[in-house]
Length: 499
Ligand code: FRU
Image (cartoon, rainbow, N blue to C red; front, side, top):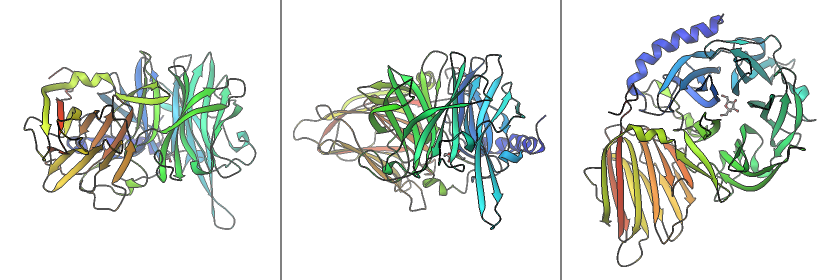
């Protein structure tokens, strides 16, 4: 039986989603209304992909965390299911924080999440305790188990922090459950711990997969660990990172470690380290092994530092990135939008080798829900120094993406994208120009863009709250380039049929 708190959320979201429907992005998942942050429990269950999310249904700000719930067959069409968890027990009364999900051998669905409890200490201060808790269900309703919590501070290495122990990601291998979770260690730094269990109730700590250096920040959140193309891959999201150009900027960021996992010591040996997404809004990615074997990643397309701004005119805040297929190439993580998006394309336009110098538009290319491929190569004469595409232009607003072959960088700039706050609006990141050529793919969806460079060698995501009437695209270069553009409108029909 759902608790009163969960039933209230379920009743509320049903009504609120109807009101917010017309405001939502076309193909990016939101909570339907209210606030969302991290993706949770991204996993297959009975042949479908389920995604839960950190959720506060009642407002567009973070509040006592619930788990919202949706499922999909194609990563484009999502069916909302009733909220799955509410903070309704003593051990999670201050929030059901992030976690994972797995299908149990008997066909039930196991959710493992962080329960947050705040107690008032004798001196009046607050003691926050984070423990890992389980709920079991049938894909719609979940019952928190009576043995909760199943992992507590007693399971931590000496000196581990009871109030920074969270975000368990669970999976099963050869009949054994594995969980990785983030912790703050005795040196005050983030680390990732690994546990194993035969019944998901009694856990044994296998080891510390990786601990961070001083630059890596005091807490590693939302870890994920998997094998991809023969390499072990560890993802985490970090708080208060120190900058180390060109990969990491200060504050919240995401990291991808590529290397080997020793299955005796459970220690991770790093061969390469990179940022996951070089844009302004990307945090807490989680992956699923899809039924067809693809490793697919989704993330919160937002960042804690920038999420202090929420647009006043919308009834939802927070959206997920579009799901991305992952590969490792030359020890780098490559990301590409899931191929299912190709079924939503229509109104194709193909323009080849158009000379671009002064700023110009092409009337065939405009809109805010697009899949756009641009290939840039030098024109005749001297080498070009910059190529810029401005998107969501109109009424004085625009968002710029500029490529600089001499410096081998791309710069994204959303200063003029409708934000009334002085949060970060500019990022630069290294890319490879081959014979001064570069390929860009842009997914535009009303309030965001996702950029993929050179077939997915780099990705960069950003939200923008420019009015939707700003839908022009402008192209310019310093020097001459020859631009090849392939554009598709994206139309998401309810049935999934091609329009
Ligand atoms: C990451 C995070 C998690 C936590 C959740 C709370 O964005 O801070 O560590 O579980 O958000 O909503």
